[in-house]
Image 1 (spheres, one colour):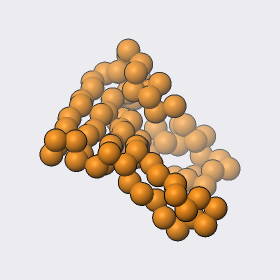
Image 2 (image 1 turned 90 degrees about the vertical axis):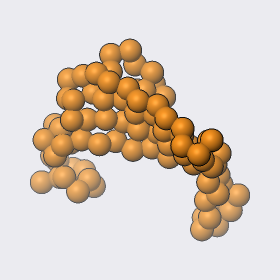
Image 3 (image 1 turned 30 degrees about the vertical axis):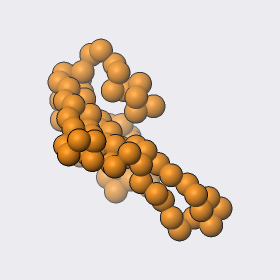
Image 4 (image 1 turned 180 degrees about the vertical axis):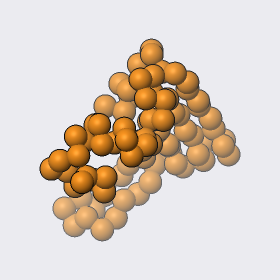
Length: 89
């Protein structure tokens, strides 16, 4: 899903970067309708080994992502009801 959102042609702004020759690669896109919202993906050292899940002891991720938004936008997205998000009323 994050790749679809980042690939959308209608981003207000985009940024890509590489720090340390691939140690930290990032990409972000800013929302058009809500400029205070952005989506980000980060590639850290080519993959981070995840531990602590007995069901998947060899699980590995190559991408970490996140979304930034104002409280107002999060409430609009969440409708403020029935969510585990910290912004729910």
